[in-house]
Amino acid sequence: MERKSQKTVSTYIIAEMACSHDGNPSLAYKIIDGAGQAGANAIQFQIWKLSEMMVPHHPDFERVLKIELSREQWADLATYVQERYPDMQIIACVYERSTVDFCEKLGINAYKLHSADLSNPYLVKYVAATKKRIDLSVGASTIDEIATAIEWIRETSDSEIWMMYGYQNFPTPTDEIHLRYMMKLKRLFELPLGYQDHSDGNSETAFWLPATALGMGVDILEKHITHDRALKGIDHEAALNPDEFARFVEMVRILEGAMGVSIPHSFSDEELKYRKYSKKSLVATHDLPINHIITKKDLTFMRAENLGLPPDQNWRLLGKTTRREITKLHLIQEEDVI
Image: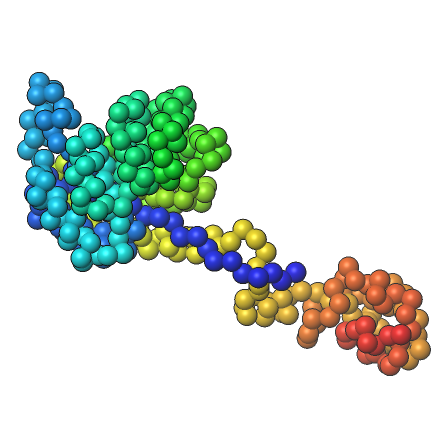
């Protein structure tokens, strides 16, 4: 049966810049260009104020300090995105409340909450109060931690929540990802689900693992992007180069086109042509004279020059009388009998 068609739903693709800029704004612009020209739906910034995020005696403090961009630099990057790629949204991964205040002035579109802050009601509720979409990263988090964070958001506002699942290791060991558990979380929390891929950028798994997640039913794909992975800078392990990211986006669009819709749809011209060519119809087993009463022995089913009655509709002919002569192996239509 033919049904009306339904548009396919596009996968939302996030280009995760993370720290691939290495603290150099000029590299950040290159990454933004790569994401924008590839057609990503969003670029994701990681913005922090180190003096409020990490204690100075932390082993990584000096390393992170070297790659920290200033508020002015982030403001310039955000303006660049908004002016050069107005269709590409900006997501800010934030770690402290002063950065949320700063991002509100930038006019960012959505927030990402790192899984490290799922147990931090002070930040979770502060972000929720903006009423903007929250991409809730749930890697290495318990069911209770996820449920509690969602409850805090719901208590504060009606912000849209996307649940983002990923194994937080770079690159990811494939046997530690557990995509089936990811889908269980989708069924449990009934939220839009995203897969954060951290596969080795030099491996084909960087393409076919997200493709697998897409086939399983995720709504969002988050993929790291860098300026040049060969330089082995910060966050390079799981990141794609701009040309690779463009291929990644193209792959996703091809796959979602192939996935199509989940309801019966109108046949395309090619499908109609195929049905006419391949479907079997009822034809006469032998020459049938006029005024002949049709029995099962008079009917067989074969591919014919046109579509006629299908085999399961033989009851429309049985016991009826032919009103004209019918040649052997030619179609018998309802108008041929009375």
